[in-house]
Amino acid sequence: MIANLDCEEELAAGAAGSAGSGTRARPRTLSAAARAATAGFGTLLRALAVPGDRLWIPGPVAADRLPEVPGLPSVELLTGRLETVRPTPGAAVLAWGETPSVEALRHRTGRPDEAPLESGATPELPGWIGALRRLPPADPAVVARVHDRRYCLEVQRTLGCALPGAGTVQSVEGLDRHLRTGAAAAGSGLWVAKAPLSAAGRHRVIGEGRAELDQESVRRRLEQLLERFGSLVVEPWVPRGADFGCTALLDGSGAVRALGCHRLEVDRRGAFVGLVLGEAGEVLAVGEREQLERTLRAVGRALADAGYAGPFGIDAFRWRDHRGVGRFHPLSEINARMTFGLVARALAERVRTPGAGAVEASGGPPRRSPGALRLGRTPPVVSGGEVLVPLVHPAGRAPGAWLRCGSG
Image (cartoon, rainbow, N blue to C red; front, side):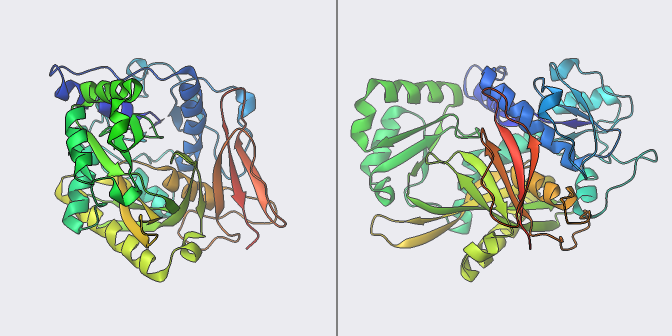
């Protein structure tokens, strides 16, 4: 069984309980639009499935939104509250992220500590996808620690790559004192205060200077986040030139299997809208690529030392400081879970496109350039020789997803 869930929200609920009353808080209910988007994008985990797998998503997705995609298996979709799902006895579970609810699901299967999804009844996938399906499940308590932005800041400081002025605050007054030190100078006065656990641009405040703290709406939003999480990570909001990511697998022995870099596509507020495979090497300078790959392996060692094993990814970006000097930030996020970069790589390896044979998940070179994953309400524009493969059709407020393959 494969489970897609908004793991940041569940982990954030645990963090909120620790910061507040000491009791575990329930995850916040997603809005209807967010639930529809999460459910639709959850179906992309077909890229990691074999025939016979069942895929849990947080809400229903109409059958006419899911086109048949050559190379991807059909799977049974499950919805409803995860705690009420009745898994097949003896089935293994592959999750987007390891949380207490996933751990409870594993206990209901009777295999809480066993990882392999393959069995004698289903074919084993080769290459890194098969390796991913065989990874041992991580301890949710470890995931909650290493997926936290405060842990990322610790690693950044250890590696000497934290943004100038980055830090944590426990109150609005603490943020005011932090800004007095010139903490936002690198971003020409702009700053962002982020919840320790969040994704997709949620749970954060972007402001300019200390005067912003006098605005009632800004102060109220900061106080709400602080009440929920106890502290916030503050960084200068810097002008980005390009965003990148790397994905990897970390096995139980601490060995890092790097899967490659990609270029991230984000909107003006930094929210993820897609990624491009195969072009990161053309966009990244040689020194930047070496720094990003070196940082990926250093993060892998830190995660292993913390007791984590499983898929992970890091984000990075190129930016300019207030003097206009170009810089490279090799570690902006640590994602101790599956990522869209990993799913996009699996899609690119498994999807068959017209004029190209099946690309096996064996790590071999594809017959077409890997292409790009794009999320949104309208399909991306393709140029001559490119092929656009619809993965999830948009419907109403629910966005769709497409794989754009080049003609390489």
